[in-house]
Structure formats: structure tokens, C-alpha cells
Amino acid sequence: MSNLTGNTRICFITNNQTITGTPGYYVRRLAMPSSVIRHIDYSETSNILKITFQTGAVYTYYEVPEMVYIGLRQARSKGKYFNAHIAGQYAFDKISS
Image (cartoon, rainbow, N blue to C red; front, side):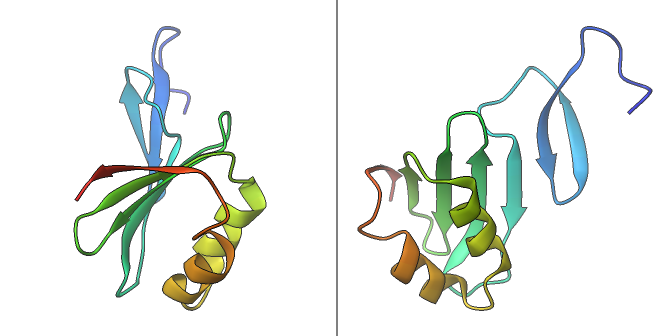
């Protein structure tokens, strides 16, 4: 990261690739090897988890602890983990369908 100038800030880390520019809302985006979840975004500073499902529906979940995000990321079955640990546990907004 030594090639970054003083005014450049990291806005995303996407599948181990750093994207620079205007700071973004989410600091992590991870594509999922899942039949249910396309990818997830997580903000460590605000504990907001954004999930894009394979159907194209996008939901934002609030006050999600980082350990829950890590659990989802590491779960063998993303759908089962989501149903057991996220669905019905956190306030959410449906962003798009």
C-alpha cells in the first residue's frame, strides 16, 4: 500500500483486492460460494451487514456484531447460517428486490 498518496483512502477491500478512491460505506465486500447469497458487504465501523441474495434482493441489517459477519463468511452453508444467526435477529431494511 506504499503507492497510495496522502489524499487517497481505501474505500473497499474486495476479494483481497484493494480499490481506492472516495471512501465508501462498506469496507469489506466478499463474493459468496452460495446458492442463496451472492455477496456480502460489512462495515466494521457501523456494524452494518448488507446481503445481496442470488435473487437480486438486497437487505441491510443493523447492529450486526463482527463475529456474526465472520461466522457467515466462514460457514459451510451460508443459507443455514443466515437463517440461524441473522434472519429475525437484527433490524433490517429491504433495499431492492
